[in-house]
Length: 295
Image (cartoon, rainbow, N blue to C red; front, side, top):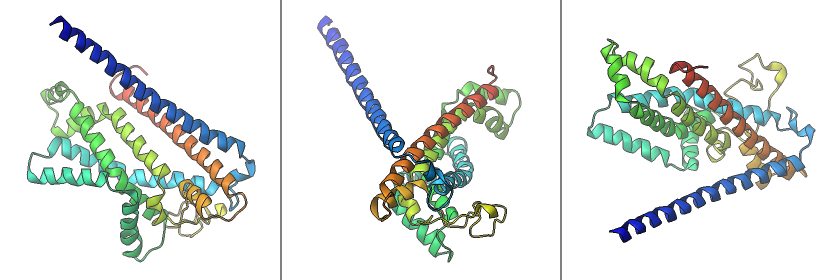
């Protein structure tokens, strides 16, 4: 008996060391990857590349932020509503099993397939052109499964006593979800939104067929939304930073193409870091306010 106990302790320690080693390896890999990209960007940095014109990456930077904003505007309400339905209203049935299978299948689709689907539906079928809106819709398809499953898991993780206490005070099911359960899920839902936004920031394959590989912005006409060169017109082509990196490394003939790609990659990774940290700070602040914690 003692020998078996010792073997169990030894196996536990060995597995702990192995798991710490795997986690440390991936952390080192991430750190090396980040330092390499930022280092290349800093070495190739030229202030003229930050210009909002054809020679700089300012327009592509704006397109990236605007496209992710549009994608989240579409996918977050639908994804959260779908998560609420799956967690609180859907009963065990063939329909629910079918819906869950659809969500799992959608989450595993290659982005290039979603891009082709977006091209056929959002560009060809509507007789439109490559646009930010078509790209945002394609990215929304990629983001929906993640936001839905994150919201569903967050709602299921809420202690039952919260729900029972709300019902005991006379609240309806809808009031309990909106005023008790959802506020308690804010940090987890924010995490899902961050992951979805991160995929949108770095997405290239799906946007290749939907958002277009060009951008023509006239900042003096920002107020005229119907203009094809208005920066806020969602129906104009909008090359993003990820697309520019891909184009600069594969088909660009400009002499500074590699420099543009390195600086764009550094700007993109910095953008993702700033967004993630900012979103987590907002989520933490909202969580403290909604759950009664001290601010």
